[in-house]
Image (cartoon, rainbow, N blue to C red; front, side, top):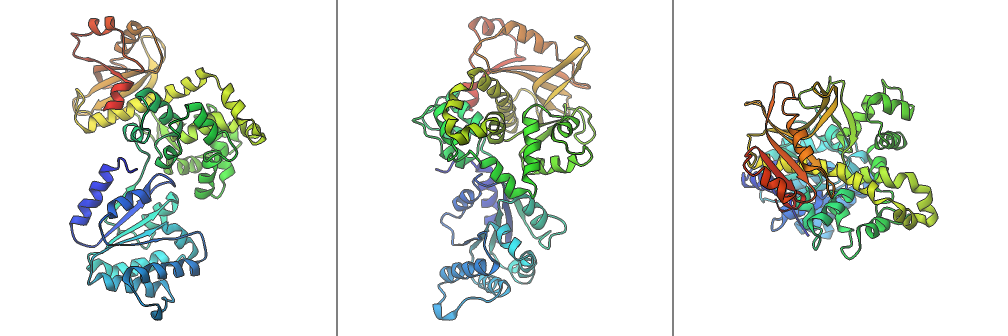
Length: 468
């Protein structure tokens, strides 16, 4: 089942319509749907497709030879090409007389076994491919390699790409399409625990409850997601245990550099490069209050941004020994519902920010927003620390839309409205002209009637975010 990826498909289609040589770099972490995206784009197009494996250079070349022979209908008597140079030269020459898409998937596997491969592609592009109408796609799951050895300034391929597409997780509305049969509330609970990675969502059994799916996929030594986060760390990093410790510290609440260093024993001056590497692959993010520089702010915090990792380090990792002893089901049964709801409350804030960004792109907000963020700092009126869960920003008019996110069955609605209004001037140089209260369920009739004449107030439910 293919869902979403409209922007990526539109971009690929636009490049294809130019009818000139294109080199598109597609990358993103494993299982996020890169190959599925490429296959969808290639549907109905003549395509030479090859996927490298973690094997010797000779074996990858032999497999590539077979793909080339099959695609061009070469006779067996011709034999294979003895070098990558010969093989790529042949494909390039054929591209002079016929148009086709050339997909080289998992490029890092082949290039790590033959370090000259990026240079060989560069030569083939410069000498022949660039004068053809071939559509070349280099794809890879090792994000660090793709960014440094394919897109990086020191790469032989630097400057040859005509576009790059970093494939990320599906957003809530697209992810929910893979959770057919679920209500908005149920879909969000699954989305909060499994995230928007298509392959993970495909493992969900809609006939099972959330806890049953969690037990089968996370809390079983044979479960698909039991070791998934650590597997990705092994793929991306040479010191996976060290990165594992950093993520465990952040998940446990150590969200500032000093706290992480103290928790892990890593020298604080050495920590930034590890944190930056985790940021680059999309596992963590560094957040700062809106209006502050991410590089210089002293109030920056680190937090897990990938839901699978967030759930795994919060609920699975502390019990790995118990799970390996076959007690995973007992662990799941013992998880307090309030802890799961507290976790989902943080995911709800992320969903509200995601929804605001979608609305801003569509021009559907009451201000001309060009950014979505959050804020925390000192509230002079309270003489205490305060925060704004989400905000949308019109940088030209210096206006804000500020929002509060409440993933609760019930709360004091009047108090929350008054509290949010009291924050209208907290962000320096900006003023809040609109307010949004995001809720798990619809606010009371009394609240809606009381605020009905306030054009600056908006109420948004989880159901409404699910519907669009």
